[in-house]
Length: 178
DNA sequence: CTATAGATAATCT
DNA sequence: GATTATCTATAGG
Image (tube, rainbow, N blue to C red; front, side, top):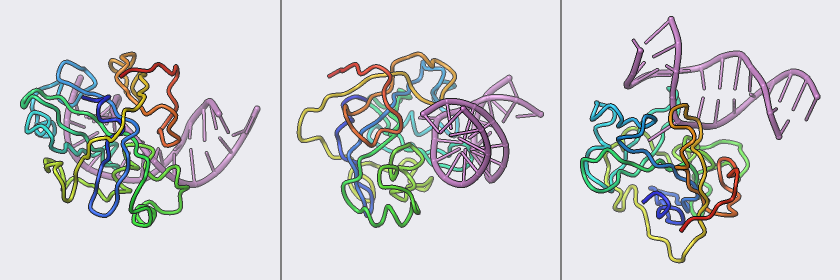
C-alpha cells in the first residue's frame, strides 16, 4: 500500500498536495510504534484502516500516518512529503518565510503546512477535514532506506515519486518499483 | 555542501 | 536518565 499512496492527493481543510514520499511501518518492524503492541500511543495503528495516526515527534512536530488494512494489524504508512497543489497561501501563512520548495518537504513540515495536529489522531481520511484522493495516472516510484531511524535502518521501506523536487531528501540509488 | 546545537514531550530503559 | 519515524539556525569548507 505504501508505494500505491505515492501520487495520490492529500486534501486538508484548506490546502492540498500530491503525496511524493512515504515510509511503511508495521508490527514486526522494530522501528515501528506498533512493535510493542497496542500501547496508548500506537492504539490507532491497530484500529480502523483508512484513518489517521498522528503522533508528536521530538516533542515539537506532528507526523501523519495512514492506517493500513486489514484492521488490527498495526501497520501504517508515514506521509513524509507533498507537492503543494492548492491552498498555497494558507500553507505559507502557517509555515512562515520558507521557500515554497520546503513548504511540505518533510513529515513535520507537511503537517504544519496543512494545520494537522493531535486532534486529528484517529480521524477518518474520507473527506473533511482530511482525505486522500486516488491518483489519476500511473507514476514511477523510487525505493530506498528510511530516514531518521536507527532500528531496521537498512530496510528499503521508503518510497518516493521519481523526479519530484519536493522530496525531503534525494533517493540514493534511483531504483524504480511499480 | 556538511556539521552541529538546541528546542521540547512522549515513551522507553 | 536516555532516546526519538524532526526542523531550524548558524558556523565552516
